[in-house]
Amino acid sequence: MLDGSLTPVNTLPPKPTRKDALDNRERILSAAREAFLASGEVSLTAIAKKAGVGIGTLYRHFPTRKALVLELYGHDIQGLIDLAPAMLERYPPLVALRRWLDQVASYARLKYGVAEIIHAAIIHAATNGGRDDEYYEPFLAAIATLLEAGSADGTLKSGLDPEDVLLQLSVLWRIDPAQGGTARGARVLELIVDGLRGRTAPPAGDRERSV
Image (cartoon, rainbow, N blue to C red; front, side, top):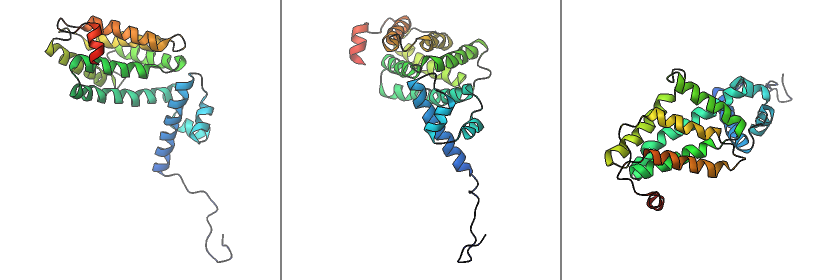
């Protein structure tokens, strides 16, 4: 079609590029993370609207609610994996472990309905050796790095199994945020850390002042 200046006019919208698709995916993930923190029952339609995309676009990237939740899980789990060695560069091993666990607990404070999906994924990975979860072994390795550093300086017991610790941590996804989840999560973490402490670890009060 030509306008008055005889310049061709494209009446069709431009085809989406790979960058468009990646941008849409990032917007969906960002909107979903924010929405799930507010409510575990938010609809995919509401997430699409929040992201500024059509529901069809959302479904092309994430055909199910579970697929969207697990994509967020993978992104945030990778962040925790990368954080473990960074903590050890900044803090003594026991403090690094406690601060890292605080971040794990913070991540676990998703709304209850979403947390159920993540908890099921963790338990499934733990019971089948992580064969279908690409993040399972790296996450275990992150835990092992923290445990080995604490064992080396005596603040943590020697011979701790990182998979045992992961199974203990999985209870965090069982805590209902609406029922004092933050305070209960902190108490659960303190119980876990107390069970891991070695003979040279400071008393709990001294440890808290050092963190």
